[in-house]
Length: 153
Image (cartoon, rainbow, N blue to C red):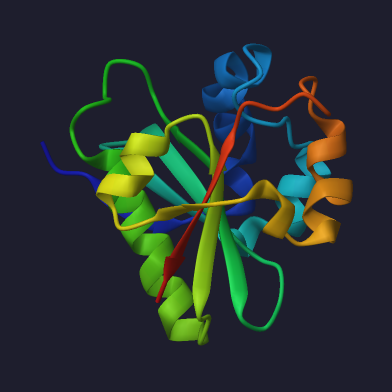
């Protein structure tokens, strides 16, 4: 089965929102509006099998030195096939190309990211604007069980 990894286009937004909806409803991933996705469309890498969207992730830039892998999702039934790992690898490679020094992730899947070379850091070390731009929108805020991890590039 051939998996194509490609940068998102504006025409992909509806499919992206449909794919992530179960994870949004369960509180695992923050909901992003169509406009928010459109504004950040260059951040997303998508995974397709034939014409079916089976996963995506975003590399969000926080500072000149720090990026974040966020909105990582793989469609149920396609998990366990290294699609998530490849999406993270695409984001890490893009971060290196841009000149980032580190990428972080805030996740419930600690062991997944640790296998990819991320190490846990205290949540208090996250950029303050991350908390007030994203975390405040979460239904779990301020009681959060996510783990903060970082990878040096």
